[in-house]
Image 1 (tube, helix red, strand yellow):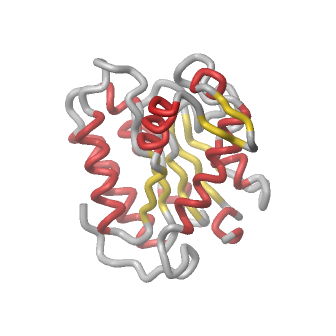
Image 2 (tube, rainbow, N blue to C red; image 1 turned 90 degrees about the vertical axis):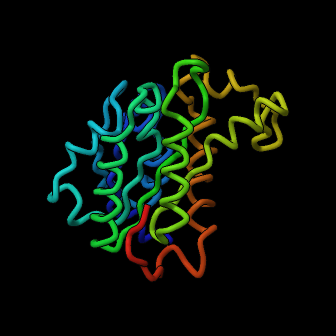
Image 3 (cartoon, rainbow, N blue to C red; image 1 turned 135 degrees about the vertical axis):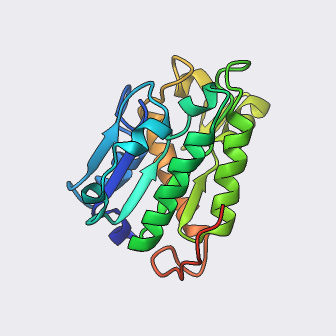
Amino acid sequence: MQNLFLKPLIVGASISADWAAQSPGKRLSSRFTSDIRVIARGGQPGAKMLTQVRGKDLEDRSIVIGFDLFFWDSARGAVDDSLREFRKMIVETQRLGIPFIVGDIPELLPGFQPGRKELNQMIRRAAGANDHVHVVPLDDLYQRILRDHSLVIGGREYSFFDLVSDGLHIGETASDFLAELILETLRAKQPSAEHQSLKPFTA
């Protein structure tokens, strides 16, 4: 598993850009390497960020991590360009034989994320149809915290705002927890995240 994180590419918005804490993807990858490439900017939709990923940015990478990649896309009504860029990245990572990790989208801005449901359907459908695409279930995690009013980490209870102080950006404790969630997400697909047979892309 550690070989997957030797040359990661992290792409996304503010969490991926280490806004309030080191990103989960970087935190996890830093256990194994210092060769971490980041293409991320706060407030930017994934459709825009993915257009900035060139062939040279991908050719030597071992994994692509798009933790918060489509969060700001969900604030837009039309998601056709998001779907188009997502498909391109799926095809390219499939060609290179590397995993593509993407987070689904929690409803952190109720009433202001008209594209969220369609994007989540797109993300989950692509993961179901492509062995190398993995979804970090952020939406389910958020719903669980709302239901239980807390999340237990290391034997201690944390409220949502303990973990996400401004309602959008995670702190150090949340980043540690989510780094482990990335590993769990990879391990969930068998036989092994390191030795998958990649099926033709569908979405």
